[in-house]
Length: 425
Image (cartoon, helix red, strand yellow):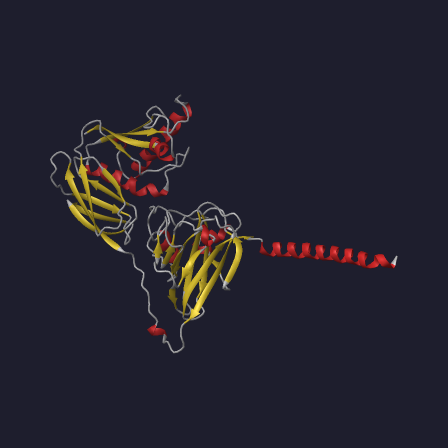
C-alpha cells in the first residue's frame, strides 16, 4: 500500500491547490467588483470627496440625480456636453503645488466617458454651474478610443485644454494647481456603463524653490463674442424701433432693450439664446439663436404687421407629456405674451390647445387635455393683469396636428402646442 501514498498525497495536494486558487480568485473578484454609487453623487451638491489618489472600480448612478445641472448645450460645444446622462460628481483638494493629471479607466473599453473639470470658487459654485455662468477649466467630450481601452483624462503630453465631441484626443492638457484649492470633476456616461470605472489622480510636485506666487495662474473666463440683432418691418424692409429681449446671456437671465432697432450683445459660442421682439401693431416675434465660433453674429428679425386671424405659436410655453401644468421654464415666454397684450391694448386673442394624439380619432381626453392647457395659459394671463374679456380658450385635441404621423420627438413636440389667434384688433 505504501507505493500508492505519494500518488494519494499528490492528488490531495492538487485538490488543495485547485481549491485555494478558486478561493483566491473569488476573493479577488469580490474585491474588484464595482461599488454602486448612490444617486446623491449625481448632483454637484452631493459630490463624492476623493481622499486618496485612486478610487474604484465604482459604478456611477443611473441618471442625472435630483437636479439636471448641465442641459441645453449644443453638439460641438467644446466646453460642455449637451446634457447630463449617467453622471457622478467628484471633488478633491490639492495636497501641494503641482502639475495635475489624471486617468479615467473604464473596466470595459467600449464604455464612453466624457468629463468636465471645474475650479471651486465659492458657496454659489453649484448654482452658477446650473445657471450656465461657470466655465470649466478642462473638458474632454471626444469620441471613445477603444485602442486606448476607452481611457480619458489629463496628460502632460496633451495640447488642448478643451476637446469637443467627435474624433479627437482622448486626453486634455495638464493643469497647474495650488495647494488647498478644490476641484470638481463631473464624469458622464451617455450610454450607461457596463462594468464601472476607476480614477487615478496624479500630482507632480513642482520643483523645490518655486515660490507659490510664481506659479502660473490660469484664468478661465467665458469666451465672449458679439451678437448684433437688427429688427425690420417684414413688408417695407426698413428698420423699426422695438422692445428687444435677449434671454440666456451670461451676465443675467434676461436683457431688455427698449425702443431700439439694432442692439449688440456679448454672447458665448454654442449657447442657446432666445430673442423676443415686441412692437405695437406687429406680431410677437421669437427666435432661438445658437452662435458658433465667429467673432460677430448677425441676427435679423422681421416683424409682420398684425392682421385679423394671425396665429402665434406659443412653443416656448412647455408642458410635460399628458400634463396640464405649465413648466417653470415657461415663465419668460408667459411674460412676453403678457407684454405683447399690454403693448396692443385693443387686441383680443383666442388660446387654442393642441395635443399629439396617438390615433386618428379625436378622443374626448385629447380635447379635454388640449382645452386644459389653453386654460392654464388663460389663467396665467388673467393673474398677470390681462382683462378676461380679451381672452378666450378652446381645445382642438388632435384635429389640427402639424405632423399627422410624427416620426420623431421633434415632430411630436410640434404637435403638442398652444397657439394664440388674433380675433379682434
